[in-house]
Image (tube, rainbow, N blue to C red; front, side):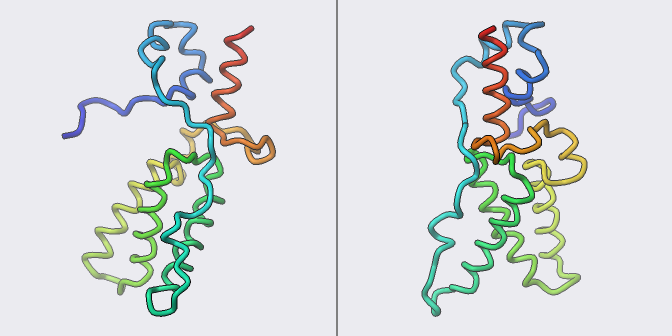
Length: 155
């Protein structure tokens, strides 16, 4: 059952906005929140099938989709691996379905929701506050935001 109200703003975004300076209680409410610092990483093992009879072509398509999504959203962290994996499966199935099928419309709607949750649509991208080049810094964008906020806190 979904919770009422708008989705919770990520801690790294609140830190970047300076929300904890205005309302320190918010930080205490989130002090035990897990911290994610790793990037998206390589595709899952199940995308590495190399046997011709068990779907090596499908596995290759899924790996390609994983890379496309990773390049499109360099700020996506390891915490979103499951969502990205699901999005890869959905995109792969969409590309195989005939135009106009009811299943295609359902999957396209689900794909749009997943892309939005990852910040991969135009509207959602405007809400992502990521450094210009997180790969050069050797960390994910959210990890960079969190590190920047921690360094401001220490001063």
